[in-house]
Image (cartoon, rainbow, N blue to C red; front, side):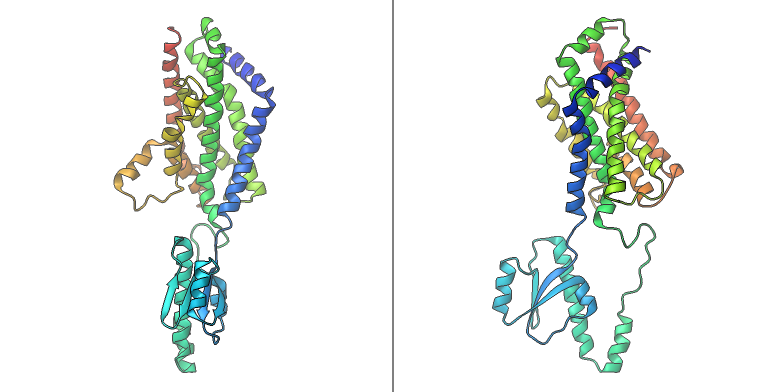
Length: 348
């Protein structure tokens, strides 16, 4: 009961701070919108210049490249330097601008298509038709996902998990730190309240707003940005709430080691940034083994993996329960460490 009293006081306190509520609910929406616009609208066609006036782009070429005919190679070079093109073809020269890997990959595809077209055009009509059939791109079937998925759809599970983890960490850390700085924590510790009851109360109080923030983020992604979540909205919500719970416990724990907000922010490079690096936003398949093993010590890597299984592969609880159990284990560990840290404020 005493834990619920603490939770109720925190809920009333935060609910009365309109600016905090606005930041909690509006900031994640703005962040996810910007990320959606940045990651969901990547470059899909290369801008290729061809020196000469006797080329007509095929339909397949038009799908991957925007072709511009120029009269001289010097003009093509000038357009390349000014950023008007990504590459050019002059006689037997195939030149790519080369500073952006993703665009360079598109340029290479366009060059390959152009070479294939030129080789086919040099063959007799009957042989060209037969050769074209041999080189036709087969129809590709997606085992997971869909051909309609954009880049943001594949990054969304990891990005969703990270945004929730990061914002809840800040919410819990700053709010708990404010309790200490204002002297509220010291006054509560004078009472007969047990450390476990105190931690549980704070966890429940902050948890209400962490859950609210989680629901807002997920609902905005699904119903406004319309990312693909598979068919199980509630399963995704359960995973996100588990992530929020772990972040909440971690945020209150690390705030106990900070004397002010600036010191709390100093934990971000060592606590939050690694979570981002190992949560699936970057492919670790070809990284050194020690990095792949290092990812196992970060809670968000398990939460993001569970989100990918449900959102991209359409799996269910039986396939993600172990990831959720590990996340719950991290939460209980941080909860227990919170209780122990409070010993430095009062011996019970």
